[in-house]
Length: 222
Image (cartoon, rainbow, N blue to C red; front, side):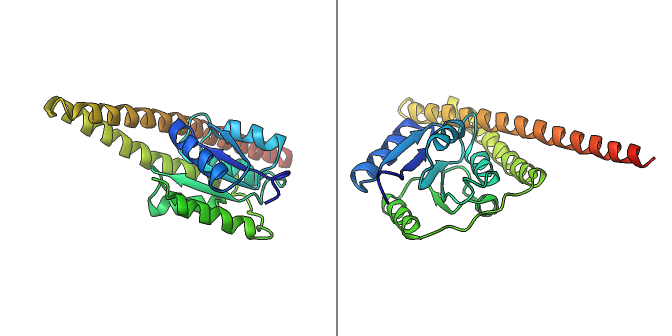
């Protein structure tokens, strides 16, 4: 990789994970690294300078990894940038299938295996070119995205309820661990709910627009 023109963009909202990846790539791999905390920050960085690879978490505030990849694939200028997904939440086979469908290049589960990550990056950087990934149609993307969000939301709700039920029964030594788990799962539940609300709004707007187009065409024919 030409360090004067290419860099690795790491997108992660959890500070200690972001620092780990950033430090490892810089000092172990010798790469130039730019970091972002969500998809919106990542798009801003990409507009300034195109990265060689995007390494991104999926579950993030404001814009998550699924939406980020979809946006990259919609733009012909960024369509062939390799994207490596990292996730601890979206790890079901259906999640990975959807990730590939929308244009993710690789999928690595958390906790991060540093050697695997370094090997994946080295492999992608040695490939001379990457085939353009055709974006899904808007409605197809959002319907698939909504399905994944609904499943994860249901799982997070159950996890929160389970921990809340256990809290009165646990010992004082276990309480910090359970409290941390409750805080984390509650935050993730709320993030997923926000994304789901946004997707529902986008689907409703799309359906309304298509209905208006159809009515307009019918009025022309009549």
